[in-house]
Image 1: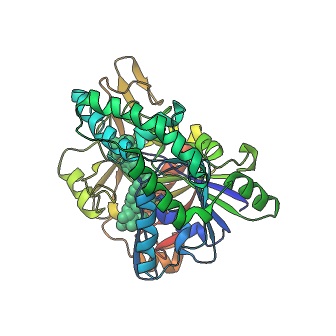
Image 2 (image 1 turned 90 degrees about the vertical axis):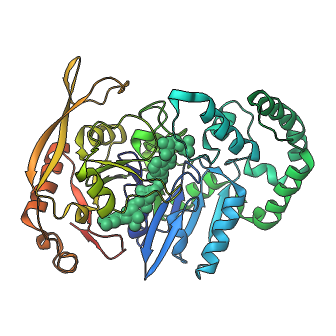
Length: 424
Ligand code: GDP
Ligand code: IMO
Ligand code: MG
């Protein structure tokens, strides 16, 4: 497994953290390549639950190197808190390197995230309010502050001296009563630099060197393909490329280095925040999925919207990312449903389609295939016997997905714990 990417195929929360942790056993290096602390990745290993937002899921394995790549946006306060919390859980979190090119989420980015949402009125995105969009906007506008700036205090101060008055004007225009002052912001950043400055380096060079040495690298995606700024349900997306291109640009590894692209597919669909969701169930089945799947956001605690598996969405992700194999998660959550539906096409005002439209705001009628459910799934038996231990209806469901997508389901997850996983 020299270089493998883990990509969410839906609207996030597919179980990327769990799968990254599982495959992390065979990797030497685990890299986050985009997003920030809008992500929430839950891992349950050796009886302990870890909730990670910014750190790569490899951090809980002490013998692995964890890298925060250049494509990630970093809230320094959150980073320090997360490291501290892990240390409280007995994880030293020392094997970490942070890209000097990663952008910093500044205090004004968080204020602007809230303000922009408030002014969007009917077009609210329902962001995580972590300053993600404004930080990426500044990156693209070439107004960003990067981790590498922390290592050059004089340059950092100069940068703040022109940025802060500029941002003050924008806050004023929004009517936000906040007086941005260079000195305390500069002081906070230099304090961060004292704590983690030694971890900041050119991680793209580091990763290319490690690859040359034959090390296995796991690239951990955040969010999901439908939240991709280009290929997702724009504008109801996040502000980064969550798809495979982001793994390349956000890590500094060449595209040709990525040999496997594992798509994480949740056995049904969820979404947090606003935006189109064709298979959403606003009924007792949707409610049941939310309860049985414990679908509450790790980052904001919001209830996730739930619905049937949408294979139009997953096919979009499979083709877009060049998915080579699938990890199917939360299969256990479907247990007890008499009938399970899977969306295989959309009825639109322009006819039936199997392609996700650029503008999904119009009327979309999901076209479903119906399948028989299963009443019991014995997790212990599945863990012991592997694929054969699954109920025959669950196997039929999995094989249907495989046949539709033309990609093998090579891992099946039947519970949140590390060991509740089978390799096929
Ligand atoms: P991520 O953002 O893609 O890493 O996913 P999250 O961690 O935000 O959400 C997935 C949730 O489902 C977490 O609470 C996991 O512990 C849990 N989970 C992962 N795989 C399974 C599974 O196979 N079955 C069940 N019941 N829970 C799972
Ligand atoms: P993981 O990595 C689910 C959603 C937000 C909002 C939209 C934009 O845990 O899968 P942002 O704060 O990024 O500007 O919000 O994207 N969102 C996520 N939904 N899982 C995530 O991450 C998400 N990260 C952002 O709810 O709708
Ligand atoms: Mg999550």
